[in-house]
Length: 400
Ligand code: PMP
Image (cartoon, rainbow, N blue to C red; front, side, top):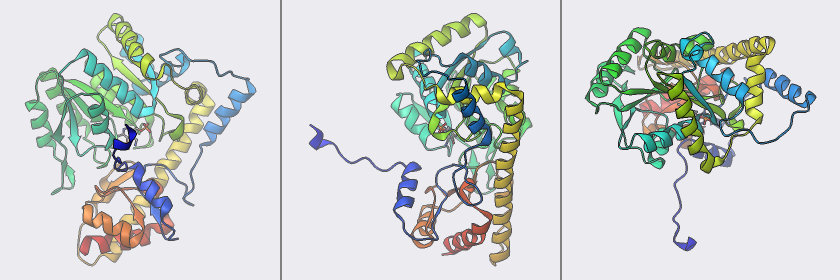
């Protein structure tokens, strides 16, 4: 009975926030979870989100069930935001879009589809990757293996290793790719490299599976950040794309995202969508409405949409400023001659510091800096005022 249940380990990412809460030191810093904070390190609700919520109240909108596939206005808006409204995949109705429980739930639904309709097919994931990817495919009973991605020697992309591993995988594998702002490394392929990645995926009849959790957050431009996905779509390939609005609209707890399956015909897309609904129904029946309405209201209203873009640029800009200040502080303080320029080259919310597990433990135990044990720090949780302190902690941890 329940007496036999063992204690599960804390989650490697969300467990960091729990430990942070329990620390009473006033110098403490939570750089674990990727959640945007203001310069005062407070959570931030976007103004456009408040405006969209006000609209919902003014209109007296109800709370009746959504259809299994989610809010139609959201599904249309999210696919158009991803591919561009004039993209042939949209015009030809070749995309099956189903609202999901944010990025995680959308990935999980796609994993359930892989397990059911592609039995035995393997998912290739980058080494390293966001910690939850492995959990998602394990729980869905989808076999996975890793492809080389990060090269600690160059602190950059191991492009040749990546290509070789994708080539070596069994034909018809799913290749999980981070659309932009790779988590945790902050290293993305260049457009030329994306083309080569698409070449090998096509050669091997693999199916690309994009995880897009940071559209607009990497560069500040929604279109630029969707460039990788659009490059693949333009080749007429089938592909899967999971989307999340946790970061770019700050809707973390609303659990709003989508899974998009690009098919080769409208007919196939309709069939795929029917099967995604069939998988969703016994898992959670239908998705929540609140976040879907917010996204639909923001994306569907030109004024709010422009305001959103400005707020996103502001958030992305603050992170870039902190990145620069951290680099400057490290360079000024560190007398070892270590090259810290990798910090400036990384993209998105995170910095992959290269600190190993023991060094990351030192960051937390001695300096009260909470971070994941893979050496990742969330710059979204850092302020300009704390950069010098963090630089001291990093230098101490590296050299001790
Ligand atoms: N994929 C990646 C790579 C992520 O970094 C995240 C957010 N940490 C997600 C997916 C999904 O997060 P959520 O379920 O909150 O949308």
